[in-house]
Image (tube, rainbow, N blue to C red; front, side, top):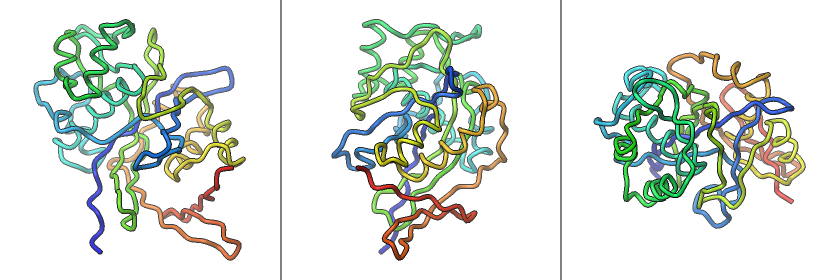
Length: 263
């Protein structure tokens, strides 16, 4: 059969410094969802056609720069960056935007902001419209490229996912507002991986691997200071099963990720 065409998607590792090191915002997707139901994942989702609105106010590296990072067209890069910002607001109530004079909007709580967040979720409102109404610009400079994964051809539902990293803006708080998750909160990468190994936090290979990468950084500043090669080489795993029935995800560089069955 002809493999399904991967859908463009953006995922965001929303970060903050905690007492035990870097913490990342994680969600457990609701069971029964058509993709990754019951799995722990980051904020994110597929691009929306209006993510490509060219009249959106923009601060920071432009679509051409992001296109070189992801090895795609400028139009696709614009959609990916906008999707990353939109999904972060939709799923965690955190907005990576600020006034044209500089800075980041310090507070996006309250009933008016919540009404606009819900309108984004239902697609009654586009990100460009929300920012224009508030006199704000998207802050692409608050995002950093982190990883690039493509679902293997054998899967019926496939995504070409770009992983971004971003620090929680000062003054804002992540909220558990995603309708796609039944649990959300902060965790260090090592703690989340330990829960996964114990069978209590099922994850897909991209989440496992990127958490392992994240655990090597001492603080958020060091995560954001990294400059990965452009374009980032996409990773598409293959799967195997050993004689003991243990399933593994194998990456192009030879890394093997053990697939833990949840308890």
